[in-house]
Length: 160
Ligand SMILES: Cc1cc2nc3c(=O)[nH]c(=O)nc-3n(C[C@H](O)[C@H](O)[C@H](O)COP(=O)(O)O)c2cc1C
Image (cartoon, rainbow, N blue to C red; front, side):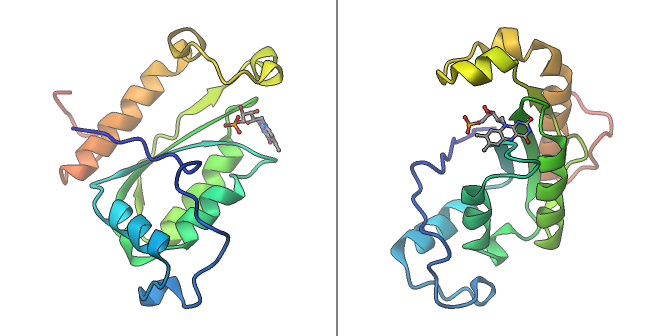
């Protein structure tokens, strides 16, 4: 199943700049229309987000809030990272996705970043080493997501 990385640093969505209600779907900004097409075209979404002060970053909420109907019914996998993995951020994000009618998978991998790595802040990381302990969780999350996209029940026997 092909994946595309959609980096919000490259999708510059100004804060709350659509005059109408996103639920009405009448977008006036070109960037919102492009964002709408991008999200609508995805079979499922993997949210990868850091935890900031027990929550998720404003840029992610703003990107979510620019749209509405595009999210509905979409399978989603939430992956967080941070000094403590990000379970509180995952819980908040899950609540928002539930409110939008998305279908988040039960597994929410939380990648723990070692303190020296956070403090060095080089942006460089060796995932094979740092995230080795999270591989089973990540595999489960992606299995669940794939099952949902294929219309199956997550956790049911699968060949992948
Ligand atoms: C403003 C801010 C708040 C943070 N709050 C938390 C937190 O509540 N829990 C946690 O585990 N890590 C926290 N961290 C650590 C980040 O999750 C970690 O630095 C992560 O690498 C940031 O991701 P980014 O570099 O992609 O922004 C915080 C970092 C920042 C900058």
